[in-house]
Image (cartoon, rainbow, N blue to C red):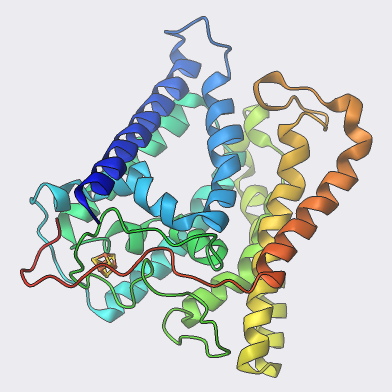
Length: 346
Ligand code: SF4
């Protein structure tokens, strides 16, 4: 990466870092009202209905871009870029354990959206996650602690980012120190050939692929207890539906997997990937556009067009099945950085 490009990414990283900080302030404003000109739920609307809404699409289309600018990633790599990381190297066993922990974290955190959604609670959660990212970057070398380690978003990036639109230069790793193996940023998750890389599709990841569509579906079947302010009394209900859904699709996946050839397994993975992301937008798009009973993002109200809901949902599903099945393109998230002669990244 030349100096100009590096500068470009550093500026983008700073901008998205700032967006992260502003988002936390907006969430705090929902609770403390220091910017009373903004509507009461502006921060939550911005966070849930804009940022979280578009995130899966970005993971699917431009995972390399996301890996370059994610504010939490930038936070975790500050120790690397400013040379105060302890740079502990993980064993392969640790890497695989961290991936399992990241899936567990994801499944623990996501249902809590139905329990507590006050601006203060979400802001505190984000601050804790950001400090954890920094700590992991301080302890472990490169991306192994957070971005390719404990980050609870990583399993979703790995699932949806299977057929990216483009390959970009890796803005954090100008040189590679082999912090993780195989590197997610520089290797295809599914190879172009029928062969599937055994590690990149470890049993842990296959368990995630199989369970995630059911988890997403189950999540949307839960009442929004957070709106009623009695979420903590319904923890059982909040976790049981997503986990039951996860178990059902996982069992189906495992039964089918036993019967399939390697090439067919690849198709099955694509089917489960397309199902999970379609399911998410199937429910979210009408809700964000205000086509359901509740108000849309920033008060948008397309309830007069509610009769188009099914057509929109069908188009979304077709789009994602086309994206994952019809396109032949399987590329890496990022170009492989060079191996350095000296042992550190820039
Ligand atoms: S490119 Fe090298 S240093 Fe960067 S994340 Fe991949 S393995 Fe780690």
